[in-house]
Image (cartoon, rainbow, N blue to C red; front, side):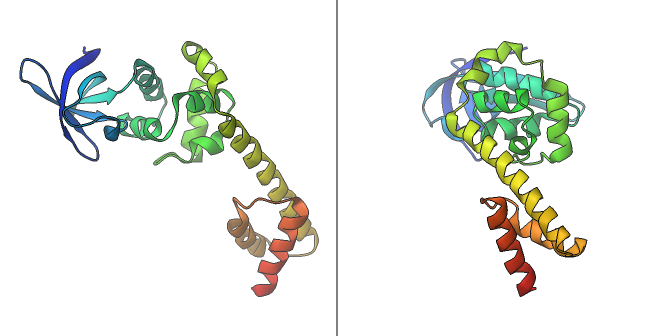
Length: 203
């Protein structure tokens, strides 16, 4: 129904803003990042109205691209407005598009309420359907790409290290503890094996 609203920001709270239009109506809006705005700022906020049995809400975005991504995420099974908003609050649009197109499930699981299954569902439902954002994927930051490559390398090295420890005769329950302790650790396979052995010796 609404594409955007123009007016003055009169209130900012952790999860909402209030935008007062020139006709004196104050609209409570749920934005991806309320602190993108300032009190008394004249702003144009792109909005999406969500109407459900127990909800009539306006979700707001600083750009039309964020609004479009929000609607894309709503097409994913298991993703509601609040989850979609939380994802947009924590991700740059370009990085989010790149993660979906490159099936980077680990990147998607960093957002609140997004477990591995939900992240896989996002990739399954949206991969190949992001043509409207094709230019964004190319803009993904170098740090994002490097972080993704490093995560893959670390995960591979950890798997190799656990396999080496298993070959040394350590029980599955011990390897589970080691895995939990070393997830996210950087290092070569050899370095991770050494760290794992230290943890196992310490008990």
